[in-house]
Image (tube, rainbow, N blue to C red; front, side):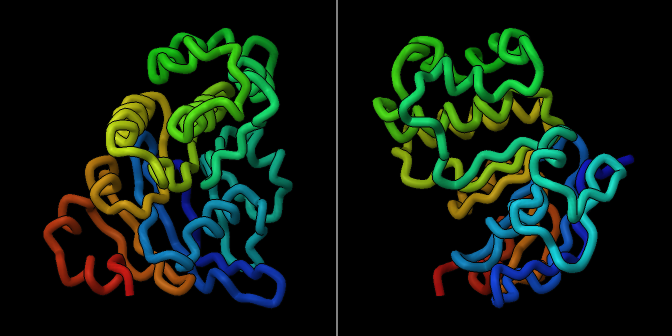
Length: 234
């Protein structure tokens, strides 16, 4: 099967609010796909709907050929989907090593992935005993992504990995995401279009809870009309 993930016309409510009103996504295996749109368009809700944190009321989510909508989040995650939330959500009172250890699904997951993780994020090896709340913003983001790499995840949902980071740290983060895409498939939410355009092979644009356009990133970067219409601040 070409696509690892297919989201078919999902609708999601949060309380009485109809947040997603028809989102369709295809994520080919081994790719980086960018989910684009202005603030409030529904990008984060889409990731949460895939993972079952906000279950869709309509439509299908198909992962590795199996429908997963309506299942509990822990069950969906156990199938091989990792989630890196927008605000990192590391355990600030635990050390780097403890944060990584707690991400294991099976015994010795961390031991099997240490070489990959510390190759991508050498700072984390040096800071292995440092408590989470003593890390810089960039180091916390590295740790958030590293935790999602501990289990054998086939798909990573990464939400705004460069938000609030210094340019030099953004470059490091971009390089790490490029490298980890050799190991896993990535669906990336990224408000910084320059970052997204350098990482992703294809894109989906969401506007007011609907997927409105998709295609190859190489074509979008040369389409200023679409960029102005859907991505520039209103």
